[in-house]
Length: 106
Image (cartoon, rainbow, N blue to C red; front, side, top):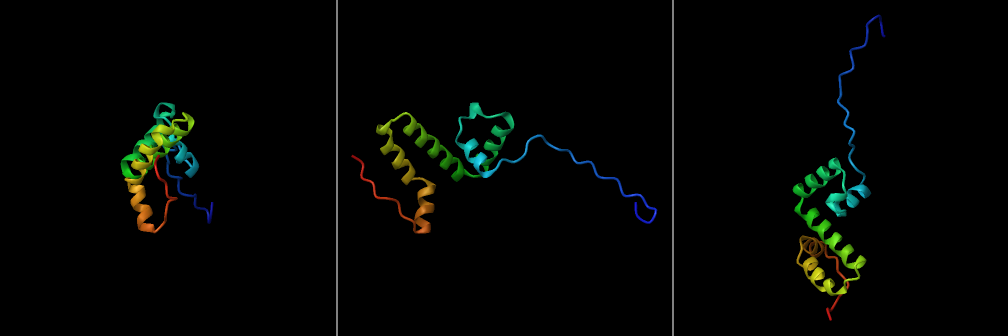
């Protein structure tokens, strides 16, 4: 109370139980199998993927690379690399002037 006046009422703010994930959590959510995500986290992933096809493609490539490593499936690597080099990520790399380590498929 100031000068005998009461303070204005605090406006009602609805609080959601879901809070935006950190950068690290976002990457984990984007690269996790969708069936392992909680409902709100899956909605977040769907929204990010819909908003940015480049992020969706990067997440798919990362997930597939992880599958190749975990499954020790070297036969899939050349196909994955070709997809990576033809992706929007590669065009971003080219625009930035960055280089990749040269790789010659067997």
